[in-house]
Length: 466
Ligand code: AMP
Ligand code: ZN
Image (cartoon, rainbow, N blue to C red; front, side, top):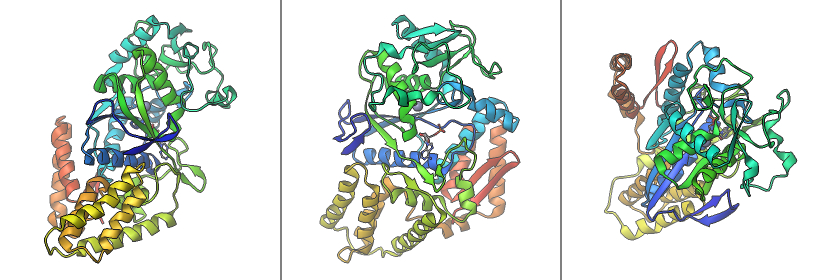
């Protein structure tokens, strides 16, 4: 399989560190608000990558962090903590806020058929690991204390700007209007590993550390969580393109300084979902959630289809018209798939022939739009019997996960409103008793029937898939 690697800026043959195994790391969401459909595009394309690697026979271990601490309102270690701002806005504690939006994120993922990573680790659960790695970076001479904070010293690296040859001036990302440069930094790009002093002293969550009571910087969490669960080597590290600098650049700096060798070979970045007004962003407020999209009449599967129609390395322009076109095409495609007759014997030769078009497309830097074309070829084929066409589509669905064989009417009939309400009440009771496994089981059971739950401060509401 060939993949574009942001590190080499080339399409390369993918070769994992250990034959047959793939260690994959994904930067998870910052849980101070709902994910917008731009964030979800990134997770959706990463999901296709993961599923295709599995389809290709790799034994994949995928790890994702949940950023519930340390992500400041500017990527340059300045501004207030996003979690703290969110908690204040919603009159919740930081941990309540994190729990609420983590659940909301995974509910969105479930609705979009995005598989949950094998390991999901909130940053607040790993503070001891951060302290251990930061201590080692200080010992090795890669980090220094200044003004109460611990900084990574970027001048100690031969090559800090591993992704692009930035000009020094272009890198003043950190210093935005109204944000003063941090006088403690020895070099412009140095970044905070541990804060004890920030301009905002009311940080809600703090921990003891050798450098005083404080909290970790944002970047260190991903390095430590990846190492904790994947060991010294990561094969593929994923994220949205905005993460390239400074987040991923800093992850590489500190991980390789700590490990003393190259850390991750392939960097997979998904381009942004933009609106006519520019990049969709959580902090700008005016963004579209999956729920709002549902209210506008679009289903999660229609959005998944919309995303698969374009390549992950091209920015995607969202407009209601574009989405409506994709939604119409999806409805027609699904109707065709459901009407395929269940007749004939599987034709192995034809299966292999059509299957090759699909794998050729995805082998070529995950070309999902061509993979969808391969799917259309099967649906339209005159030389395939029903059994073979159905088998091919079921096979493609292992990767595309478009719910093409799901019959909503049957699902809807499967449970009455009373039964749904009773299950929602059961789930609420399980949550109250801290039996989250049972609560998750009920949510998954309902999702299987096409009933999607949304937790709001007023209680749980549900929608029935179209
Ligand atoms: P956040 O929750 O803000 O940390 O972002 C979660 C993920 O979404 C990260 O991988 C971001 O790079 C990605 N992301 C942010 N904005 C967009 C966008 N407009 N389109 C696609 N991905 C995005
Ligand atoms: Zn990260």
